[in-house]
Amino acid sequence: MTNNTANKGLKIALGIAIALLMALAIYSFSSIQESNKVKNDLVEEKTKVLTELNQMIAQYDVAMDENDVVNQNLIEAKARTQDLIDALKVSETNVKSLLKYKSKYIALQEEMDIILSENDKLKVENQMLAISLDSTKIQLEDRDIYADSLRMYSDSLLEKNTALADVVESASVLSANSMTVSGVIERSSGKLIPTERAGRSDKIRVCFTVAKNKLVEVGDKELFVQVIDPKNNVLGSNAQVVFGEEILNYSLISKFNYENQSLPICEYISKKNKKDDFEKGLYKVNVFNGKELVTSAVFSMR
Image 1 (cartoon, helix red, strand yellow):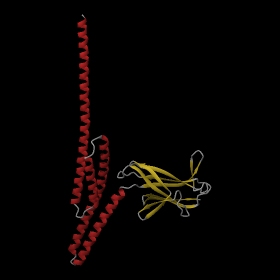
Image 2 (image 1 turned 45 degrees about the vertical axis):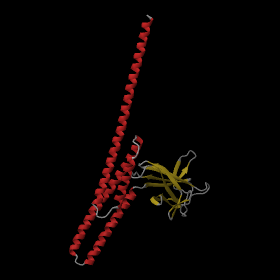
Image 3 (image 1 turned 135 degrees about the horizontal axis):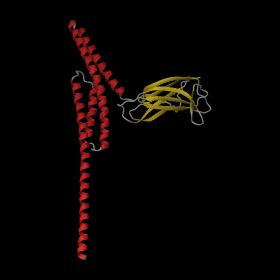
Image 4 (image 1 turned 180 degrees about the vertical axis):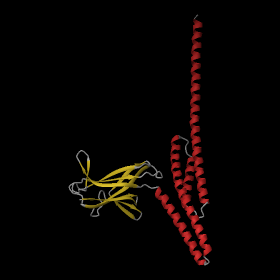
């Protein structure tokens, strides 16, 4: 009787152990399958991005082959795209890495749309210039006059390529607009009341909007705000920053995090001494991105 009971208990324990081992095996197999699926999805997405980047390279090659004159913007954009391909090939295959490179791919794709659009316009204009030149060549018998026309065509082509370079460069920098400036009275509660009276103003408020631009990389950015009073003094910190051989005196540095969206910003310039009043008259306010002026305004206080 005792042996039978013991054997029965042993069989039950053995059955439970086998069931647990089977459950563990099924769970492990399921986890491995799920992990492999995620990895395969990431590899597939990475391959897709690489394929699309290589297609962009092919489009740049076609555009360059169609131009008689080498367009430096096409060359540089193609090089940036190739750099991203090379980096993506050796990058880790994970979600964070793939999102980073896909964001860069989207920015390059938007840049390509701009460059190829401008390049198409330039190509049409070049064709029209070539047709006009051929017509002039037929009419002109004097070789010197024809040579002058050819030089004019070349100069025009160079000028248009330079203009295209300027368009692309200006398209990939921060800009600002909608500037408003006024004096403000600061209450003890912190409330700010706009005023045009110099003697009542506690601060000068400078507000502007940083424009949306998907070609600009996201992250921490800064603009230099310069407020000049009627006596031509730079208010605020009146600090200096050097750009090559140029020196910029600024009132303050406006620092912000840019996320490819329009961003309203307000900055405040205080008086040097609380007892002093702001000068009456016309003020000029400038906002610089580096050494480049991006927006300006004038206002007066009486």
